[in-house]
Length: 479
Image (cartoon, rainbow, N blue to C red; front, side, top):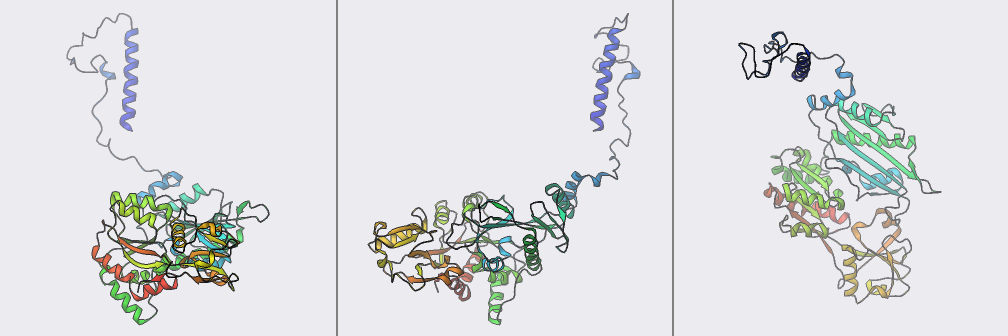
């Protein structure tokens, strides 16, 4: 900055002197005439000595400017603290891991589903949950929704800057974390610990006109306490001990090789986290959280495959989604898959089975209302393939959407049935001759740096306790 200022001042002096020189009477010098002793290549040759640019720069020229006592009070200087005074990051749970769907449903008294189409920037940890009064409603036709996001801003100064800039008109609330605010739209931001913040927002639709409006303050404060307490619990206890000595011994055996890894070095994606999360937590408790277990979601398919093709990354994928793994196999990103379970379709009927349905053959009646997935989806294609094996077409009954409220029978995957549906409906097995199951594969990526641990993880997925977990969640285990 000093050099720039000096250069500008020098140019101003030059222009001034040139103007003065040209306006003085009797000045007969030309550019080719130089005073004695001057170098012709000297750009200051025509400038009187007293006005020449000095080159004897003082010794302290490059010393830093003195610091200002006011610098730290200006909001933008908080950005420097994020870089210069950044704290070491903490290990945070993922938002999706804070609660199971059953826990949220029990707390909210509503049917809860994860927004599978939520878009988020890479690196952001945010989840949105749809809340509905009835199970058969279309997910997008929600009655309420809750969004939770989690950030580590690196430094407490960053938290202050974040709150001041994004929520300037908020007010402080007590008894929540180290610091908490509630905005004018009832969004709650909690500084849980150090630089870790969690944000919660919610809105509900008015019954009379279905217009969405922010949730009431009391609801938000209660929900904020619920989320904050669980987050602190998860941050303090990254894993739970095994329930029995046998399980603990099994976990320790599985942990043996993973102990050589650092936090999150082995990355696994899975369609349904709850299937194995409990057991992965046991391994992570012994291995510095070596396994990073992440949900595999439809909106992220393309991004995940692109990243995998360009720079590698995850080690394994556990998925039943043909639209994902078929493309990965086509791009030569996966090794050959191992089947670890099956999704089994069943016929869902009303309690008492008033239509007396015993299998697919009983659906071929003109007055039978059958709900099923759209034919453009993998599930819909599977259903129609089973019907074709049974010699039935869609013209033999009245087709209803899978979200239809009024139906006599619905063909669904058993593992997709909610706890509420298990109470309200009965389930009829499909005849073995017509049954088509959808396999759940474990794929190793060709870019994995831990092939020996992939083999160990595959054995873990085929272990008795994980296979039992598949069965509990409605899948058919392979063992």
